[in-house]
Amino acid sequence: MLQNRRYIIQGLFILIGVVFLVKLFALQVTDDTYKFRAERNSRLRIVEFPFRGLIYDRNNELLVYNEPIYDLMVIPQDVFIEDTTRFCQLLNISHEAFEEKIWAAKKYHRAKPSPFLKKISHTEYAEIQDELYAYKGFYANPRTVRRYSSSILANEVGYIGEISQNQLDRDTTSYYRSGDHIGLTGLEQYYEPELRGERGAKYKLINVNGIQKGVYKNGALDTTSIAGRNLITTIDQELQKYAEWLMEGKRGSIVAIEPSTGEILAMVSSPSYDPNKLSGREFSNNYKLIAADTNKRLFNRAIMAKYPPGSIFKTVQALVGLDAGVIRADEQIVSKVERIGDHAALGSYDVTKGIEWSSNNYFHEVMRRVVNQGDDPNLFKDSRIGMDRWADAVRKFGFGSPLGIDIAGEEPGLVPDADYYDAIYPKHSWAYSTVQSLCIGQGELLVTPIQVANLAAIISNQGYYIKPHLVKGFEKDGAVEMIDFEKIYPGKGNEYYPAIIEGMARAAKRTASLAKIPGIEIAGKTGTAENGIKDETIDHSVFMAFAPKDNPKIAISVYVENAGWGGLASGITASLVMEKFIKGEIDHSGWFKREEYIRKSEYLKAVQKGNEEEQDN
Image (cartoon, rainbow, N blue to C red):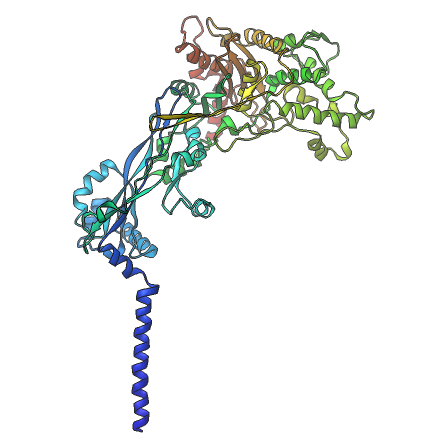
């Protein structure tokens, strides 16, 4: 009996010893709480976020800058608050919000710092900083937020936001940490590696109560943050403001390019939003409101909207026919029979006259010659061969694929080819007569506004273009690095461009007389993009142009949705933007007040009335 009791006592001692050993192992090896607490008795690591690169316009005017903000950090295990109500009042948060934030911080780690309240403005922080010292376990971590000098270029510049878990999982550089900010759209996203810089860290000596006592080890472990590189954009800020002002209250876009360089002078998508709304603590709430807006303010129409090009595409038909050698610039083609609906009279046309009068039947014959060249005696097979030849030639002029602009989301548009129609018509039972609407820029053909502006640049340059871009260089500490861009030649020659330019100059005088610029000759082409939306019968107004005609400084495309014929809404808007860039001001003389006409939007009254009636119902 005594021997059994001895074994029991020995077993208890062994069990107690094992329990202590397990607990000691947990404290020293598996649980790092005490490790972090011990380290914090001597030092506190504060991340030093780098200044994000600034964004300038082409004239060195500031577009995007940084504003200081603060994240209030918390170390849950160190928190001691005598009066929670007073603390909540200080931060202007509810008691429920306080409990949620503390719980989230504990869930992350009891001994590691994490954000308690993010994006406290500089003004707000100045009001509370003198009282924060009384609350143990809290400290402020400075960082910056983006601010915008004007409420323009929202979709082009883009915005930054907190990195998501999916983005962290895809980060192959291992640069980012949870809570970091990253460019999410526009230039902020495309040039993220250049803009973000490199983070640093500072170590502070603190006591057991968390009070900073000085620099840890004389700063031996500190690393300095490195600011990001500044972007030098191609945008003319004043021109952009003016163009957005003209488009207020309308749906559509403006893309203006400097033809000789491919630099985008202005890019407007309307309606848009104030980029300052997606910066700061109210980002989430504002984003939900903007995203839910039925006007699609986050949709960048300049690079994402796809429209039938309409009559402006007749210039491409001429270029394709000339390159293919099926027509000559001065060749007279006589239209005796109306093959396709036309507003121009039957008769004799060459390239210049065909563009001037926008003859549907002339360009019907031009495209037919490209497609049906007798490569195969079977009409259907011949059309199939020729259709691919035509599609390949059109794509060389920048259609059917993204041009490669330096922001994400650019749509390719659509250039249909033989495979496309094979999928629609079984057993290849289609011929040129099936697809003839393409000859006047209708049918299945789709283009984007930036592609049309680029076409204007090609014609103004008489045979080449440089990829449209929004950034032309980088700046850091006074050193500037410019980006090199190559010329792209889509066609075989340039000797026939004068005939096309002359046709556009005559067309601008005849069909867009109200869009003339005093003292400057423009070359332009009106268009009407068919509206494919059911119950919306008013088509879109399109205008493509460049000026001055003989020494082009600006090429432009303007789309105004539901505004009808292109010579009015889009043509007048284009003339104002071009004049503003070339002259620096608008000539207000003369009986017709272009600005007043565009701003009043008289041509949209019918659409607006229809929308109001729909809302009333």
